[in-house]
Length: 406
Ligand code: GLU
Image (cartoon, rainbow, N blue to C red; front, side):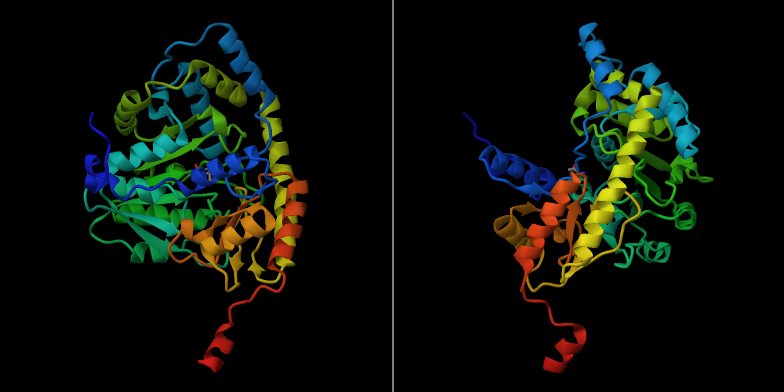
């Protein structure tokens, strides 16, 4: 029998592959809870709301009617058409059904990077960014190039993006509303980024998975801007905006030829998404009750955001502002205890799970990410526990004090 050893793995592609920190943390959390530990989770980005009732009902009906065989691989025609309508009305995208692939958003990210990136190609992404872009870029043989966002508001400055471009740059990843900061790219910046992408001949991967969770400004799709449709792949889905994480359904849109190629990869890897899952997703787009449910969810998330942000602002050692979208805050911390050590301390001393900022970007040791997709009761208790666990904790010397003692 041949055992799988490290030497069996493709060394250039798999040697560096580590588990997803967010998914591994969620697995750990589930194990802790199964063992009876009362952990409050601000870690994984998963809305605690039930999925919209029209989705559940439609999926149940589809199952009962026997839709348990292969579905059309690119997606049910009715769902692809409904997505075209939905994206025209909400995002200003003009799409034909052959420009839509029904696939999990995460697979859309994976397929796009794998298709576009070859050995030595550079990919621009913001520091911080969602945890899975870098491993996928590296798996494709590419090099991630971080562009630091300004800590005040986490604005991705187009001038910084342009300065980071080299002759090897092939792809720019945008994610608005943003994980882990909740920041949103303004229309003015989006226009500047579109101009850069066209002048420098870059592809854009626009990850819009949090698109319907926007509090203070309107979400814009870069693919809707002049000249961008032919160089943008947009991925999004039902997981976050409609509390349907376990359904694993989303979409990828872009130029028809690219979508067909990525659809071929989807066929080889996934075949199709289950018909009953697609039926549930279609109901979300067609049933006005689901649209209202979604709006109510965002109103509740806004209250939770305000509760968490104001609570953190009252605890010495945390600094943050209210983010414009998604359901994360990414406070800057000024404790001597930093990064993973700080997250471990909160888990051990307070039974509170948070994600260390360093998982999201190389310069984010002094940040943690908290998801507020949990009840306001959990947020209030979590804030009390955090405050108690950090009472009297040593703070880093401020720059002036550091100079005085050095
Ligand atoms: N995207 C979510 C998060 O950042 C879920 C886990 C994952 O897909 O990474 O927590």
